[in-house]
Amino acid sequence: MMRHLFFMGSLILISGLSMAQSDRPAPSGDLLRILQNADAGSDFHMETDSLLVANYYKLLEKNKTVTGVPGYRIRIFSGSGLGAKEEQQRVRARFLSLYPDVDAYHVYDEPYFKVYVGDCRTESEAIKLYDRIKGDFPDLFLVPDYINLKKKEQQPSDP
Image (cartoon, rainbow, N blue to C red; front, side, top):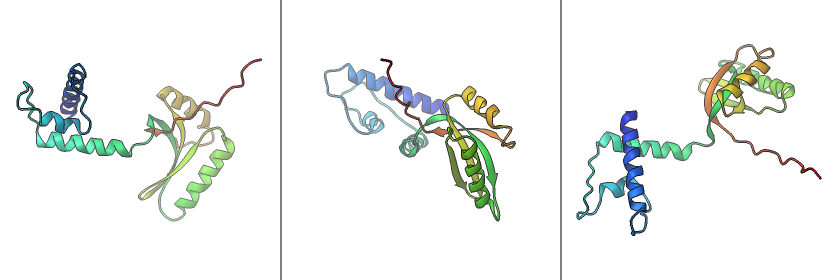
């Protein structure tokens, strides 16, 4: 499956580069459809599997909903049942009071209430945060996730 997506991506990239080198204006819109409906006079012909095309469009739709960039967070709480939502709120509030410099996120992933902390770009950054907070929150899990990028605060310039 990944091999097919890689192959499809490579074809799209190569065709985009070849079109960029021609005198014709670059096409806009759905590149896969443009490749499939190439001019009858061109030397290019592409046949695709219907499952590959369906997965291509699923991936495009999924990418429209993704916000953030790949990174890591640490799950400090996961619970379900009576009182889980209140416990989630207590754990998040306790974390924010102990570590006000680290963001905390509450998530409901049916049937679990969860609390994730941190916006770590790398695994090593996440491990440092893990080591920092493990004394206060013993049941931690490092989780790959899409994270928010923080804007670096402007440092005052030296006079």
